[in-house]
Length: 259
Image (cartoon, rainbow, N blue to C red; front, side, top):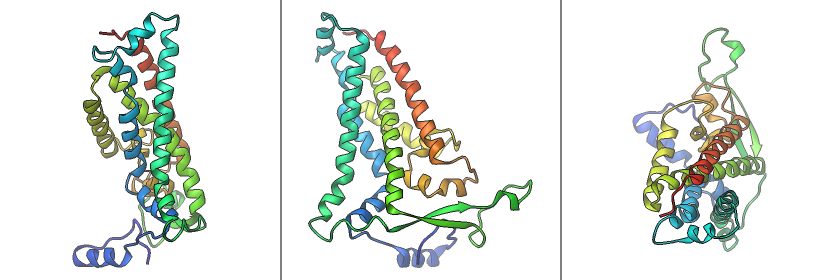
């Protein structure tokens, strides 16, 4: 029994179906696969940004005068900004990688990491040509699907994770230049991420690509009846939005007043 997005059980039947189809990973790759479905990656990236993304904002206040030191050195503000931004981003990516690999490391002490040949269900959705000018409707009796290996799944997740780390870290870094309080910046960034995933169902909304699992399995394409929800468009949305915020952050930094 495999649960799918076409399940339409309600009431007691829904509870029974959920109990029958509930799965628990017992080996490393399967555990990581299940954790990915529960926003492990964006949450870990946000925690990494909280830990490593406050270098400029914290050193621009009176308690930490790190930026005062660079102002008396023959170093351009651009080089200082790029160095501090890049160091924080690299640390955030490494932190995300270490946390994500913990299930694999712990599984070595028990049942092993398992096989990357495990099949993952990917939805093809409705065939638009069969509906003519009308809007396609998801139908579990006619919509097609295919399987990919867990290895392909994690390879696609890796690309999304790298661009997502760049995007989320840049959002946090940008907000930290205005708020200058790590706790408040963390809460505001988390709130923006949550609201962004709930509203604005657009294929070019970068927050719609924070759910890595639904993008790789193409659930968003089926549920939102929009074939533009692809990994390629997700990489573009995350990368271009992150680049724009990085440029705005650089402009903000150049006019930042050190207290």
